[in-house]
Length: 372
Image 1 (cartoon, rainbow, N blue to C red):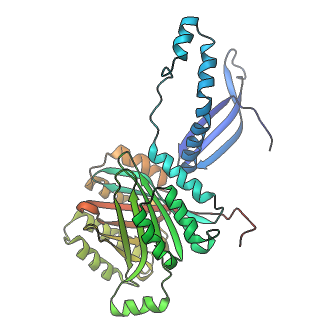
Image 2: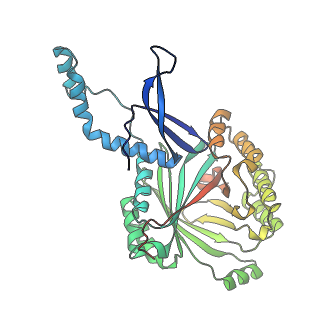
C-alpha cells in the first residue's frame, strides 16, 4: 500500500454513503496568495461503515488526549498553561452516543467471524417520530464458525442478554436454519434481538395453506439494555395467501377499516401485488405473550420495488404521525434509491400504532477462503 501524505480533506454525505476526499494544499493556479487543494484519493463508505469509522477514530484518539493537551499548553503563557493542565480543564466534548457504541460493537463482533452475512437497514415511523438507528444482520446457521449455538449466544452475552432469555434461546437454538441479530437504539432505549428462523418444509407449508392455518417461522428474543425489559416474539407465516386474503387479515388485525394505517398498509399491499402474485409475498403476524402486540410483517422483496416507489404512502405515514417534513425528507433522500424489503406495522407494545420499513439489504462476502 502506498503512503500518500494529506493535509486537507472534504467529507460529504449523500444517497446513504459517506464520501471522503483527501488532498494536499497547494498555491491556487493564477491566484496569488490563495491556496487550493490537489485531490489525491477518494474513499466512499456506506453510511453505517462511516458511523463505525467515526467511533473507532474517537476510541483511538482518546488515549492521546492528555498528550495533545500538554502539547497545546506549551504555546501558552505560564499561568495559562498551568490552568490548562489542571484536571477537568479539557474542552467539553459532546456526550458519547451509547447506542451508537453498542451498534458498532455488534457489527464488529459479527464481522470478526469472517462469515458471509446480510446487512439490512430499517426505520420506524410512529408518534415518537422517526427512528433510523435500526438494522438486521442475517447468517445461515451453518456459516457461523465452530459451535453455532455457543458462538451466537456468546455474542448475546456480550450484548447483555438476560439469563432467563438466554436459557430460552439456548433451548430452542436447534430449530434455526438462519440466525438474525437485530439492533435498534436511541436516547431512551437500546434493544438487542436474536431471531431463530426455521426452514419450513414445503409439505408443511402446503398443508397449512390448505387448512387455513399458520406456521411458526421466527422465534425472537429481545431485550432492552436501558430498561431491563425483555420479550419473546413469535412470527407466524400464513403461506400462499392471495391479496384479498391478506387484506382481510389486515382488517382483522387493525379492527377498524377506517383507520388511516389500515388504508396505507392495504395500498402498499396493492402496489406490491401489482408487480408480483401476492402468493409470493410472505405475510407474517406477530405476537408477544407479555403484552397486547398485534402486528404484521409483509416481505416485499419479490416485488422488486424501490423505496421511491412507496413515496406517496410514506408521505401519508409522515402526515399520520405528524413527523416534521424536513426531518422525513432528509432521511428519505438518503434511502429512496434502495430496494424496498419489508413493511411491518399494526399495534406495537402498549397499543402504539407504527410502521417499520426494511430496505437496502446487502450481502457481505466471505473473507476467509479457508472456511467451507
